Image 1: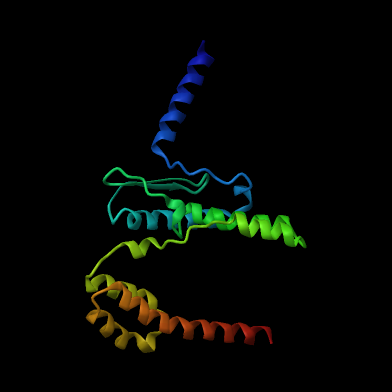
Image 2 (image 1 turned 90 degrees about the vertical axis):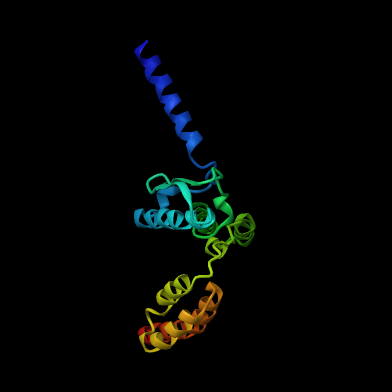
Length: 194
């Protein structure tokens, strides 16, 4: 009798929890045990960061458990966005990890690796692009993050960001610097190996 009550209460609690969580199911060939705990934490942080953007800035639930990767993203209007369509979400990271695990499971097997690539349908939408903001504050904060590594250009970049009325202009300026940063990083990497 006691075990029946425990079983029923456990089933009821899990059903209640399932109705409040995401409807995302992990791929059958994904092994969470192969993912480092710090990566799982980063994935959950990414999910929590992107959720408000998918909900036009307003959520009623936004959580993620890094031990199980169970997440919840519910917009204030009650809708649940399809996180699997977006980059930097748990489904996106799981998709990429599943692809990597699949490739590792098929060493020296071109057909198997091609099947891995065909099966990897990771999200491609950028949730931050959904947020339409015309305030120069958002453009300035975007530019500040982009130029934090290029101190010699900060003053001129900041004036461009202050005059900008869209995030798009800030991103365009940031792309110009990213090429230089990437070239510098590649140069340093080459120097380290030679």
